[in-house]
Amino acid sequence: MNYLRFLGVLPVLLGAGCGMLDRETPEARERRQMVAREACIHDALVSNSRATLREMERMLGATGAGTGTAVMGYTRAYAEYAGLRATQMAYVDSAINHARARGDSARYARSAVQYAPSPPESGTLEANVAGAFARDLAIVRADTTHPCNRGDR
Image (cartoon, rainbow, N blue to C red; front, side):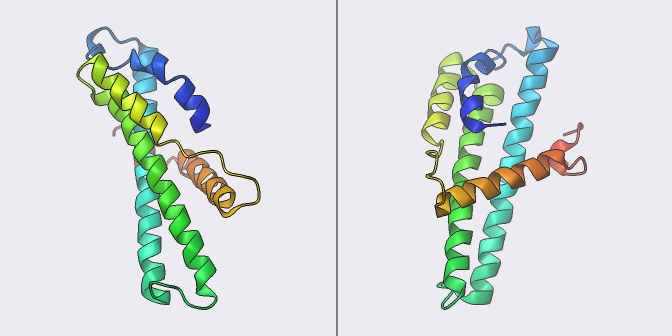
């Protein structure tokens, strides 16, 4: 799901939260579950990226001297981007699934918008990282064995 398009429907999704679960429609329940699943997937990707960064630092040193410099720069940029996206999705999840009042949902939704990374310029490191993250998201979403995709979560 394109995150900018997702943020555009966030106000509609807010109706699914805020203590309205007693009269929730099946569609609203499905949207809430989708948001929780997306937050889980984003959290898994940021955890993996941070573990990869730690392993790269262990293998190459914190600076990644020599040929490792570019690899370390990319790995750090990916971990930072994943962190921003995971924080953004955590706010969306809070707005939809955890807020106790409509005002809380609106505040969380505003925070989610603030954490949205700017669209990167084509051909840049940021564009490469965003593309890799989008591919990784698609892979995890399609993996029916991934814990975030289990129906019993």
